[in-house]
Image (cartoon, rainbow, N blue to C red; front, side):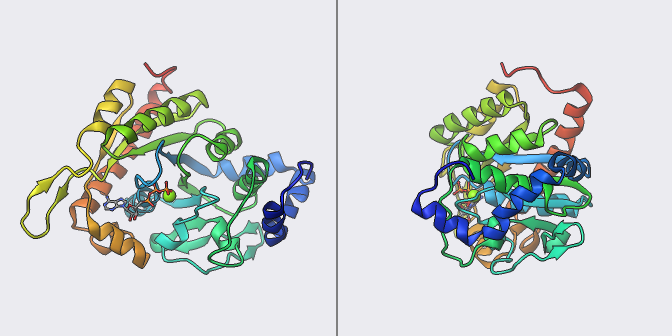
Length: 304
Ligand SMILES: Nc1ncnc2c1ncn2[C@@H]1O[C@H](COP(=O)(O)OP(=O)(O)OP(=O)(O)O)[C@@H](O)[C@H]1O
Ligand SMILES: [Mg+2]
């Protein structure tokens, strides 16, 4: 490693020594060839982004993954949030470890045969923090894409942290084209403002923007049935028409999402007839359609 490390980075580096040291092997062992071979077996790579934190990206990733799997797709999920990896927890896989197979590190298997990889599977403990700068994170992404045996997939969904920093840059650089992004926002102005930046970022690094999902959009009181727009309404739809990108749908706010998330079962499986699950199924259909449309007509050159 050429860059100097501070104490906490050295601590983290020691923790993941087996992971990071395989970087040298990766370079000397035809990294580009291996990366190309792995990626050629994955039909669609979709990075899920937002400008603002806490808007529901990880929730959208796990439920969209299940909804796509229920449509017969082979799905993988890469937890690209190195500092706050939540995907294993949301799939009920926390505490598990990946094993080595004949062709690389084996992803864990979640509901509906979804293949899952996350730095959380490689950490010593649940509370171990990762304090890494960009180059180390980039090395980890290289291994996630080149050294994990994803096999054949229709979709690889990548759960990213909020914003337009190291992680989306590494993902864009390593995956090249075609790479798609789904942008998640809540309807409120401050989230929409940030999500517009994510859309412009996606375009600037040559991602095809599949569209915007408006999460936590409207709430029906389970007691009296009254409707409330807790985070306002319509912001995601408005941003999508202003930016000229598809609107993929609204997911209502429902406290059950929080409860089943803590149980490690995506709501699409636990409560398939709920409004939220039906909304996720529609988003899965639109994602399929948007990819087919954009692949046919090619990526738009620039956002208006
Ligand atoms: N539609 C919804 N209804 C109710 N709660 C929701 C909904 N979507 C997400 N949540 C809850 O909101 C919180 C944040 O969701 P989540 O972790 O998916 O957001 P995130 O964008 O991935 O956050 P981060 O930016 O920290 O990665 C969680 O408690 C989750 O259960
Ligand atoms: Mg998240």
